[in-house]
Length: 93
Length: 155
View (tube, rainbow over the protein chains, first blue to last red):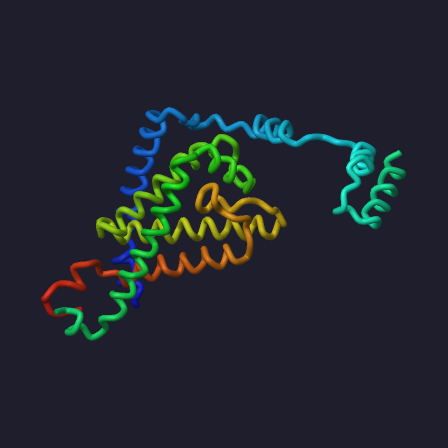
């Protein structure tokens, strides 16, 4: 395919592409403003998201984990893991 | 039938199949994201490539762009423009994926809304393949009329 032939195909493609982009942008903004669970156009807050994600993660200390293990006596935790936990607690203390 | 007269009938037929495949992929991906733009905004944020002010706008705009590309590819209206944007989109997605794979981040792909898996090199290969398919469609697609017209092939 020659350069001329390629440019002949690309020029209308660029023009058509810009039309598609413009129409999609218009419809997207219009639809978002009309829907009930819309999101603000420029209002994304990463700080709020991090805060929300952190709130979902329960915090537990290693000693609490060890106590829970001793209480439940889980069959899943092997003595090797118990040893690692003990070492980790001793390092933390 | 033109399909029989054409010297190279398989290339445009294959381009048409590729075009419809792209349309189905874009339509599914777009609808999944339109349903829940909030989750898609979080997926975009996880890539850590865009500033906060551009995340929501992208989360609103990209799904609709995908749906419009799908509609154009199916209907055969502005097919070349749709194929060009499709190629550019897949190139952008591939770049974003490659950057985050090299960073070592284990994040959700966000390609098909909430049902997407975590990013991997396989996803990068998929996006690059779809980029190649888009370029193929851009160059070789001749639309429905070419395949189903009774005129002779003169090009």
